[in-house]
Image (cartoon, rainbow over all chains, first blue to last red; front, side):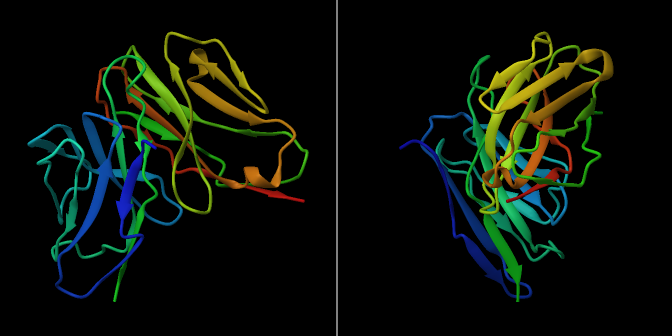
Length: 114
Length: 115
């Protein structure tokens, strides 16, 4: 089945540690996105990528980094510079064209700080 | 700048009641898309509908219906005869109609449907 997978479902980070969240899609979508969700809040855009080897910062990129080496994959690294990383992280992807621009989401990764 | 406001933080209804979730948006774009997503307790966002700004026809899908009014910048969502399975957080979102546009989300409305 086509879809978006995120792993792990839960992730624990220690002080000063970098952690990487995985996002893979087999929908043949060109664009991929990372959002952060805090309790009682909407989603805020961290990074997005419209094409392989290219990505742009979203509204809250500080303390995060991404790469886009393959069309199917868009991993997000939460660095030690991100002082408040506890949140729910959602990855999304979308195609191009009038009927393809809807973003579809993965199941999310919940990041907790130890 | 784009903005989406969902003024209702939480709504509680009893099963079989009708309920309307409000969404008001702001944008300077002449063409744009409006969306509704459902987030059940599992956390994954489920796409419900996308509406183009040039199409003000209301839409009905089963128990769900959407009322788009450009004159009041609103895109409201009504669930008829609500069911317990409708309990979730519902997000309204907005994007430019310009390819690979990012979404601006409202803060969501939590709907609790009790038996």
